[in-house]
Length: 219
Image 1 (cartoon, one colour):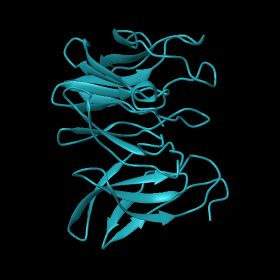
Image 2: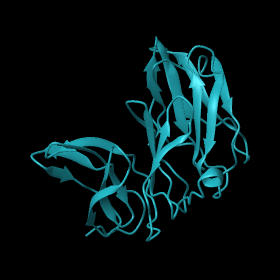
Image 3: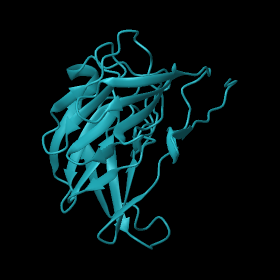
Image 4: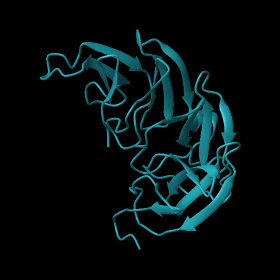
């Protein structure tokens, strides 16, 4: 679910002004520690994106803050990078249009994850289950093939080191996968059945063990 991120004494949340689609999404800043609605509109950065396929659905992801930049993913798989000082848009990458991404029924709620110089997210398309984007430019660095067209979920990608191998963990609709940090190639997979795209992010808990949980009749 959507959470607040803090940078330099400011709280950053991914919100949506108004209800009628397709209102643009925005990132709202307010001084950390303040209360009430008076500060909620202190500063608003607008990221112009499409409305969702399910009507006026608000963003539900948490912004990532890294090296003075703020990164957000909207419900329609548009990725934005802003300058944290003034909210100026640095770059935008539309995964559905530029990478033939395939969204899920209730639209994405995943959050961006930064690892080194790479921004990680799910693409959902046949050519890319997962994507690594250059955090400075938004250009793809690697793509994980998805020949079975396994749908993405709402979970976010989790970096991990298992058995001395650095990798990224992700929960697709078909189960958990681990992919290489170098080129995104799939290293392994663990089939697991559940009915709706709401698993939590896969969590490495040590000793080669990964904690998985979901609802809606998960096996």
